[in-house]
Length: 197
Image (cartoon, rainbow, N blue to C red; front, top):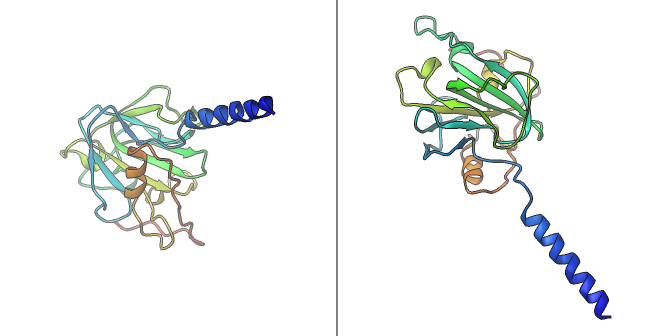
């Protein structure tokens, strides 16, 4: 009887210790810096995470690099939507969602489409490229469903949850506090058309 109880206690200790040491699925997308961010973004559901130029932009989840833009093509005179992000990286997470960061000052050389990243792996550094030129350094962060390459108006961030209008604020708060909270993304039946602005 004592050996059965001992075996059960040992098994429970192993299970509880193993569960407590499990790696997180999600992590906050900026590492090693103090940051601020607001609940809402100006005209679509995303977040601007402000910090010092050069703060690390890290993958919020393990996955595969989707799109990488290493050249800042944005010009104020043309203000082309696809160019507004400046230097940017998107990752298709193991949860099936896309995570996008833009306005970067630098992208790590190994970060190319198809490269497998781990949770917390450095993708680049926050900055103010693209339409953020002349503003405080920040990471534009968006969550969306995967699409074909070049669908920038979805990649930059879409509404989350049941009505498709929720920004990523509550997920950022959870990840910053070390909690794993999976975003819920609404996938429309028909892809929204490219916006005029």
